[in-house]
Length: 566
Image (cartoon, rainbow, N blue to C red; front, side, top):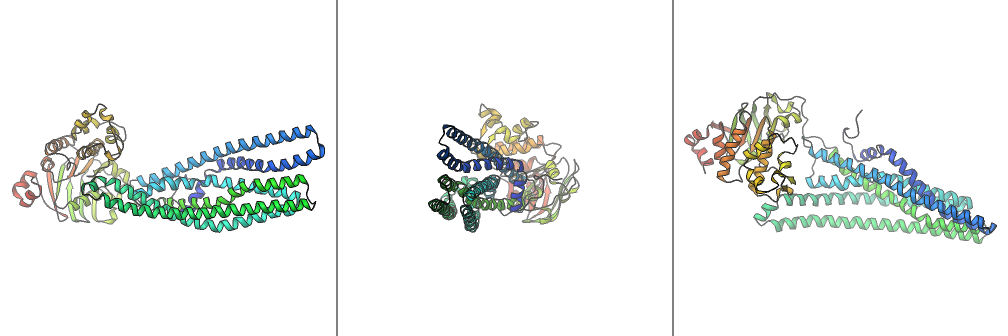
């Protein structure tokens, strides 16, 4: 039997059903307590009417004392039932929102990317605001039922006084809900559009933060700000539209509720004037007409919240139901095997073929940077195997036949723009906390000066995206993380472009020493790394055109000399 967290993702309505199904216990408890609260609130004017009726008849202190005690019991019930009912519902709501946030985050962090046309900023909005609004359905249903209880109790009590009063409440409630149900559909449509525009604005902010340094570098920050301002203005206009629709909805609901309350009060007054109901029943009817406005207001707002929850659930479904871009196989690579690229055609690659034998340190000098980036993407399985021609084999097995988890364990591709996370140097180098090779990785990447510079050492706090590090320090930190992983096959893409020549020379020697006996492939134009490699492959126009040692290629290949000599 599959649990809700491992089932195949579902569309929006099914997401709401899942949320309701796994919170049945809390919703039942919350409904009982909130129903008791609404019943006690409605009982208050009924009790007042009975007190007036019996006090006028009996005129005794005993009856007055019993009446006061009854009111105390009702007030206590109102207070405690609301307190504990909302506690149960809000706990379930918060827990359910957490589950969906984790679920959306898990989809975004899966090794296999999903075919969803959303940016990271949009997914962030879905994982936060939409998850919270979807979970609101946990509170909406019990509050809807408890409000119905209050209306039903009021209708029955008024019917006992005079059937016409009860029918007026029932018919008026149905009419109000019919009008508001139509209006709530527009709220749902407007809310979906607002959520989409806010998400686009969030995605734009995320993109700008990532590119803030280069934007400042070439003076593009003002144009970028103008672009964001336009997106944010669209979101603001849609938010105003939603607020306007919500205002019309709330105003209409309040007006209709007031009309119903006034109709009940006037009808009761007319019946009392005609002598068809007593003074006590008149007090009860007028009191109910006032008290019933709260549950009616709550009752009439529920369709709006249902539509908002459904709109948010549909947005979550965009992520949860998206298909993976590839379906990994079940096999695992053989440890100690070779890395083979056989006739790969993708982007700038035009049939690249080469083999890196187990334990070899090979460097690839790509004359076109685009070709190096495409090769790194293919090796990192960021491109689905069916999306390119040719084959990539790891440990004698094609990547298409391997599970993505086994590929990640065996083959690590460290991008040239490795992300730096808020935390410490230690948590960035060793996210898993194993700490087995962290010291050696720090030394090999020449990160020792950064560690020594701060008295906290490896526990030095790093800001988001490495904002308190220089470009070279961020690059060395990323390299240290890759080396600390100690993968069977390690692919490095331009790992030293931001460091000086002396440091680059030391890093090249250290990496070659640390990775001795382990398969290493470096995509680089660095003379130091090329010289440290056992073998250099030349990638030109998407194919391997030459190979040899760095020094032999320098001496015998003029194009290679021009491309890599500094």
